Amino acid sequence: MSTSFPILDFVLGLFFIFFLLSIITSSAVELVLSFFKLRGRELSVWLYKVLDKPALNSEGFYYDQEGTAYTRDENGNYLPVSSASAGTSAAYQQKGARAYQLKLVAEPGNTTPATTTGSKSGAKPSKDIKLVSLGQSIMDHCTATVLSDKGSAPTYIDARNFISAFLEKVTINPAHPEMIPEDIEAFKQAIASSPLLNHELKRSVLMLANEAADEAKAAGTALMLFRVKLETWYDATTDRISGDLKRKWALPFTILIAVFLTIGLNADTVAISKFLYTNKEARTALANTAQTALDTANYNQRVAQINQQLRERLQTNPDDTTAKSGLDQVKEASDRFHNSIADLQAQMPQGLPLGPDKRNLETMGGYIRRHWLGWLCSILAISLGAPFWFDLLNKVANLRGTGPKPASTTDAERKVAGTDKK
Image 1: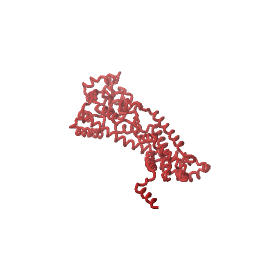
Image 2: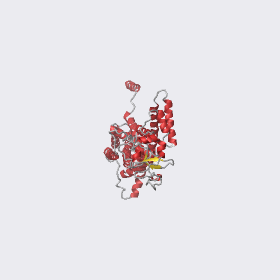
Image 3: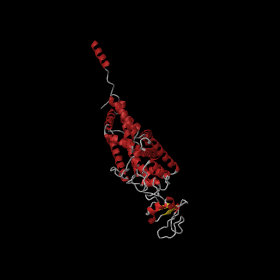
Image 4: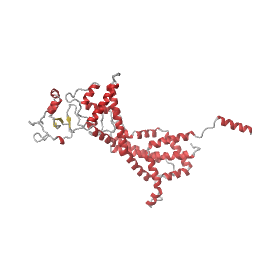
């Protein structure tokens, strides 16, 4: 399909080349992010930073990476708990949380209580104990992860599953670890007395609980509203994490890969523009290819994947059959990268100046002087991203598809009338 506006064919063809190059770059960035697990790393950094207090296990004890249970004395020192005592929850409940925490429990085989010095019982000093933090316990929680390694965050944790793990951990009552809060007031009381949250975060969570209670007095759905507010807080936080990921990793890698891709393919915008401007057949063929490609589901799906790339929601539900391991993510990103290069090679018209310029390869200085401006334009264009060029392509394609404005009925009547007069 040709058009009476050659400039539209020229713009559509040039934008289509930028779009394909951006697709390749986005695929390469996705491959890097997946290979180095940078999404999960950013999420784990936030969890370790904000939820840094030691967590409690299901029996109400602090615990380390090996699963050893600890209690805490009145001086704030963590003391190991014998396996026999740790499993006797009835005795623990009778004494009460405070009394049990103050008791120095001996290591198995020792007759003297465990002290923080470790000189008599062999117990580790508190400073040498690496307890599992609340953030890590949420990452390892059964509702938050399945395929990720212990102590590392998955690519994304769904808000509902994160809040379930968060509330389950922070509401553990050391004196009665089997008890579960049943209403909003019980949750508020458990959160207020929890030693797992710093004061700032605890006050923020309690404020959300109070807001939910006030809004639900008439409806009686305070607990559901509380969860919704917590999920909204978590989603807003992950949006900021996604912004940090884009700023710290995605954008620098995009520019770096764009530089290598542009120079490697000799994607000189100036040379390509001259070729399309002076070759009508190639210009029209490339514009028609772009118009056809936009109507296929392949590119629409690919752009949707790129838009979700920084917030890819994988492996959050144990019942999710679409869950993917880290190796599967890398393989898929690699396949998309190779498919993008194949698309570029298949869509380009014959004779397009895309590839090494052999005329100047013998002198590197002359090669760079000839192409540096076109390279710079291409790098800047690719850095805008595939979604940007996809939107522009659709707008230009719609404008190109409308064709010239049809003549009105009045104009047609005037022409007929003028012919009759003649």
